[in-house]
Image 1: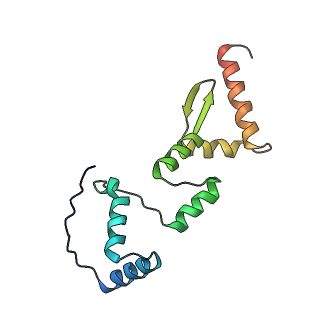
Image 2: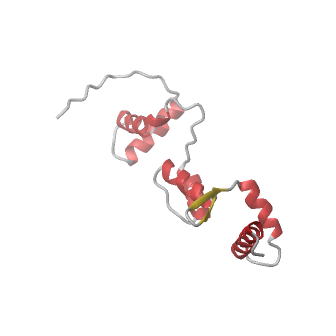
Length: 132
């Protein structure tokens, strides 16, 4: 069993921040210090990031509703978005950009988008190999 050494850290916060911390800590039945420690541990991987993106519950729930999937970690969200922007032909992944998908959607005028993409990809591949 390994021992963990803890060091006290003194910080100054505004009264507003202290009130928010205290209110959340009371709801979670912990001290403000324990809450801060937990939050720092949760965000430890982003401490050196230059542009970390942190979603509050409202933003996360909105994304979950739009994407139709629940997310617990940033890695899950990134992986899901990457999958949603990837077309697979056989075992070959073809990454697409949101710009390309938007442009394709403007051309699927009289048919569902999924059918349009299937038809277009198949037609272009058939033309490329000379079977059409």
